[in-house]
Length: 300
Image 1 (spheres, rainbow, N blue to C red):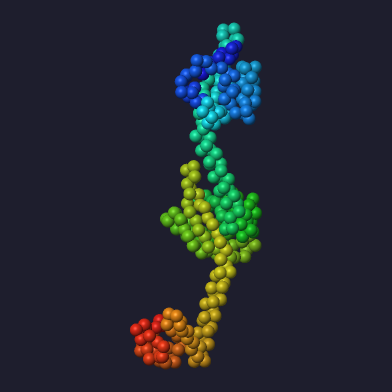
Image 2: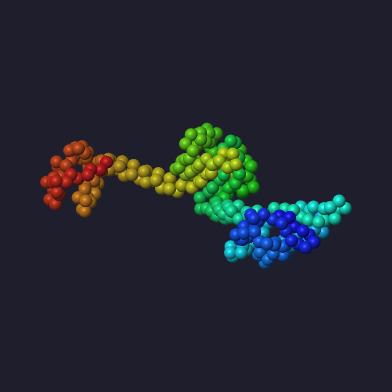
């Protein structure tokens, strides 16, 4: 585009008019026609920049929204530079206009995606950490991570897990990283983690390797499963005590599933009758109500 600064008429290409929604080159184009296409919200800023460029002989460079002749709103980028005569008087401004709608839409989609990720990252009920694969330095952690481990975000960022003494041993950390590199992702990895206070808890980790701008990162999530592991351990201990008490008292236990017609015996019942699991069906087939065509399922 080549704009006459005196009468505001412009020479331009057919592509210029296509950008504004015209199928053919218009007989005339002026700066005022250009302003009419700019959305009212953007128009004052564009005009201010134009007048400043004219007054100071500086370049004109801006982005704005336009409404095409078909009513569609698009984004454009425009830039102009002054042309003067031999005396230095300004005569014209030459420049370009480009439709940048797709780029603006992509940037907006990226911004929204980053905002959603940031919200999900910060408020996720699982502890999340983003670290560098190369040296294990923390790049970011979420609120749950801070609460779970006792470190503030400022204490964590820029330091490694080894420096913070989060892993119980260097070997445990090295094993985790080695398997992650080999597989690319880990799920359900159970590991003891040390808090800032020195207390330990059992965490279930899931992690994956990401590559962002050529740098490999680890995105890890932590869930505290200490209570679950404690409950499982207590259940195993209770089962062990029950088994031992039955052995001492020569007392067995059984359970009959009426609907499935399945009978389960404890180990002590087998010992009382001097039976093995493989031989129990012969001794049960004559029990009233038992279906001799269905073999009961034995227990431990």
